[in-house]
Amino acid sequence: MEQNQKGSRAYLISIVMVAILGGLLFGYDTAVISGAEKGLQAFFLGAGDFTYTDAWHGFTCASALIGCIIGSAVSGFLASNLGRKNSLTVAGILFFISALGSMEPEFMLFEHGIPSFPLLVTFNIYRIIGGIGVGLASAICPMYIAEVAPSNIRGTLVSWNQFAIIFGQLVVYFVNFIILGQNVNPIVESLKILNPDEAAWAISTGWRYMFGSEAVPAGLFALLICFVPETPRYLVMAGRDTKALAILQKINGTAAGRAILDDIKNTITERTERVFTYGWLVIFVGIMLSVFQQAVGINAVLYYAPRIFGDMGMTNPMVNTVVMGVVNILFTLVAIFTVERWGRKPLLITGSIGMAAGAFGVAVTFGSPSLSIACMLSIMVYSAAFMMSWGPICWVLISEIFPNTIRGAAVAIAVAFQWIFNWIVSSTFVPMFNMQLGGDEHFGHWFTYSLYGIICVVAAVFVWRLVPETKGKTLEDMSKLWKKE
Image 1 (tube, one colour):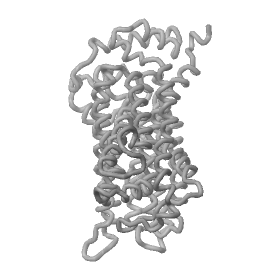
Image 2 (cartoon, one colour; image 1 turned 90 degrees about the vertical axis):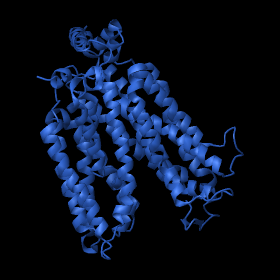
Image 3 (cartoon, one colour; image 1 turned 60 degrees about the horizontal axis):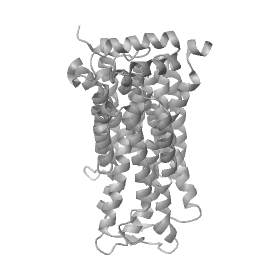
């Protein structure tokens, strides 16, 4: 009887754990290329019908981002028409197909182990399919968690999705390391493989196992998502009030479940409304949260960490990268355990200031051997400040600030902008970083991190002036918050 009155916390945690597997796959899929790309490059350098240039390799490494943009753009349509749960099932199936297809792109089409241009196209199609899964998961997993979570712990539970993303990246780094084992990755210079004999296994097989390893968590996610319920908010919009009430009461207790259902029904007068029903400001705030999360430059740091630490003169940049990964995990936990106590805005503003300090610190110290430790610490501060703020809290806000009736479409728009700016930042970092002015080889370093620092300051002002505090508010309160007075 007590459980019926208070709800089942174990039931809530179990369905949230399944949902954040989607976040883990998000991190896994985006990071798996880091260990596989050298073997993949060497494999396609053996093609006889075309030359696998650096440009082709760059496109192949980033092709999943094309799928991410597509997946996030259609996530609103799928979430509103198929439901949140079924859309996540689609994402899981796409992850699974991509993993197996990327491992064996020749399947039923080409002779195994013979590189060619058609095979490269097929491989990239499989990577784009996985990217669509990432785009769907990146938008719908936080939305799903927000729509099942009680308002007093919603921020904490959604923040665990960001933890799962970072953890998924660390898991795949470890898996790639185990798969490679005592084998050696190829060394490629000027489109030539310098160690073809000792790297033969990595070139023929290693990269395949790395991509294929994703099939295990993908298959598990696609299976387990079948056992979680649809979100009560979607069920009410679909006219299935009885089912929605049963889930709400199981999570929140009998009386609270009924009250929440009444709240939902009072804010949902029709299944969906036009995106701008609540004005342009709510959409603008959602888009800019996504833009700033990427424009502060964090993915340039995460994607190119070994290169950055190597340029600093560090003797073992991979060790520094792993240390930074551990720091990222720890500071993501800071956000998880403080978001409901401190609130969303204070964490974002504090994080923005910390990131600005870190970015300006890198700009001032980079290139000076005597300041290499200070430079490395500045990078760590920059990354840690992001992980305790914009990393998880952006997802929390995007999942909760939009009113129920426009959430699917509005989240899709916001997350699509996130992936677009992810691509912009990732593709502009290297040319900006290597810029020279008047023979000054460090100008690009100073300019790049100074620009990121300025954007961090602007982000802090944006949050202070335009972003509402949503701590403790129900999702139904969002309709009142954005309604014009």
